Length: 401
Ligand SMILES: Cc1ncc(COP(=O)(O)O)c(C=O)c1O
Image (cartoon, rainbow, N blue to C red):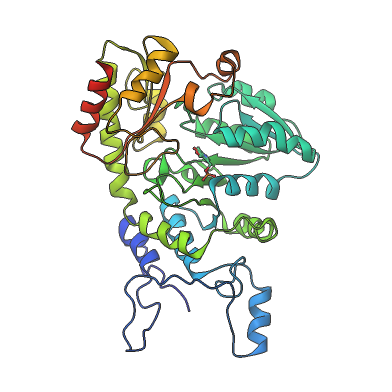
């Protein structure tokens, strides 16, 4: 069984993604008709007629039908779609974004290697860099992501990997992809980039020479807040190497999750276009409001790195971050007054989500620790959803009164 692959490189992006995941002709029913949508291959193992066929599958790289930890037709479909979207040769779907990130760290690095990262990343990535990698003898140097000289100074002869994330969670700071790439190439280091916030619709890091792209597919790629998954994308030889680590680490996706992910991916370009335009509308409204001290949105001309963002991104994404006058209490009370936006972590779904970082995500840290991590007491992070933008703005306007 093979999911039918796109026939023509001439097809546009949406066509290729839809053809990758709908699997036309993949499964024939008893009446002879074939299912239009891909079936869910809810099987942990696959049967073969001849013993040699089992042996062939057992020794193949990424066999689609052998044993689901090794591969599954539902995995192949979304892997093809994401490789198409990112412009990569191959992709690997994982059980979560963190599974993808840890797969890259543990699959690419060994005891004695050195990694250079930004000093601001998604909190789970930060914990991996600060607490887990040193346990395996991997040294980490964190640098200011806006300072190319700091990246250059941090490189050592044993630097094997540079880890990037842009725009960064939560402050939407931008890293110069081409600039860091040039430095890493001079030192023969690989570069991995977390593209979760931008999505491949807004930013395709492989086009800048980045070696590996990781995603939390839990967010925009799935797009409906109903699944947890991750991806690694890149050159086939690197993905094949990581697959060998993946089947040992075991952080795999599952057929139903992958099927849901395929459903979400088909509408990604349309959803992201709406997230982009609605987020811009929210950012512009907030920037003009007297109760707002500062808005962080790379699409605003006031963002200190707006020009860099415009150079390397096709759109600015659905995340808007702002600081509210009145400090901790004012920001917490603002989120309590929201009626349309929901108070929940995560991002990239159909519904608008708003979190007060200091009281909801980083409540366990002291104010001093939060300040050190760059999280101000009045910072609110919004994942702008797909509702009517006027309703989202009206909700914010009312809660600010
Ligand atoms: C930028 C970024 N990377 C990675 C992750 C981790 O993804 P997951 O929760 O799917 O493991 C997240 C989660 O919020 C994220 O925001």
